[in-house]
Amino acid sequence: MSLSHIVLSSGRSIELTELRMSSTYGGMLMGYPCKPINDMKVSGLQRQAECAFPTMPVHLVPPSREYPDQTAGAFGPVEVLPSVACIGAFHSTAVAPELDPALHRSSLIVVWFQTVLDVPSGEDADLALRSVRWEQLAQDHEL
Image 1 (cartoon, rainbow, N blue to C red):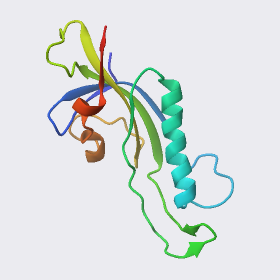
Image 2 (cartoon, rainbow, N blue to C red; image 1 turned 45 degrees about the horizontal axis):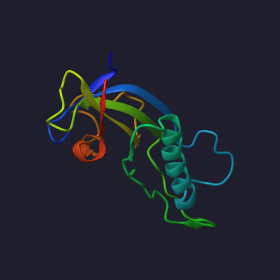
Image 3 (tube, rainbow, N blue to C red; image 1 turned 180 degrees about the vertical axis):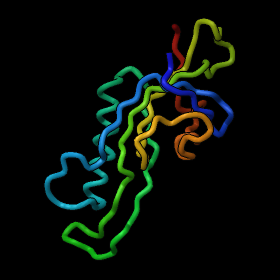
């Protein structure tokens, strides 16, 4: 059973079967959100996905970055990522048309950031998430 269905910009329907959400800045004790910290947060989330799903391809949707205060501190200006970090396991029909649709599926682990604590669904999912190039990134496998 899937958690939700998303229709990609390409028209392909994908199913979200597992979702891990966390606070982007949860546990941050010192410093402030800035480019070096955010780069570590983004690469750390991608590594976490790769370790959790070692046999599946992982794709990072580049997060938006906001600059609410141009005053630079020791590590540069304040730079803020969306507040919710997400890792999702998505599945769809096979990418290769010659594969038997009853026996094959395609899968992709997607890492992204979003502003709200909602399960992405339908055509209302964030445009960056719906723009994932499934045919180039997902991997076919036999059921």
